[in-house]
Length: 144
Image (tube, rainbow, N blue to C red):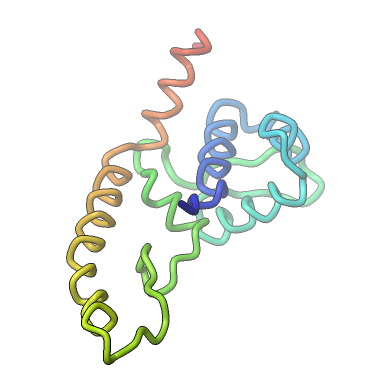
C-alpha cells in the first residue's frame, strides 16, 4: 500500500520545534533534527509560511508561529503541506471497462466508503492541536 508522504509528519516536527524554541529553529537545525535535506525542510517551511502559520525573515535566525498552537490543528497542517487533488484523498483508476460489471460500478460502490474513511481521518486530525502535540513532547522529554 502506498504511504502518504512524510511532508505531514515533517511539518508537525517543524512546527513543534518552532513552538518549543523559535530562535533555535533554523532550517539547518530542523533539517538535522529530522535527518533530512535542508532544501526539503525549506520547501515545507515555505508551504507553512504560505498557509500563514509561520513567519521567517531573511538573515534572521529562527522562525515564529503566526497562529496560536491551541488554534492550529493537525488537519490544518495536513492541508497546508499535502496536495490532495479536489480534496479527495482517494483516487480512482482511469477508464475502467464500461462493459464490465465491476468496471462500470466500482467507483460508485467505493465512493461512500472512501468518503467515510477520509471524513473519519479528517475528524481525528481536527481534534488534535499543535499545543497538544507539543505538550506530549514536553512530557516525554521532561521539558518545561
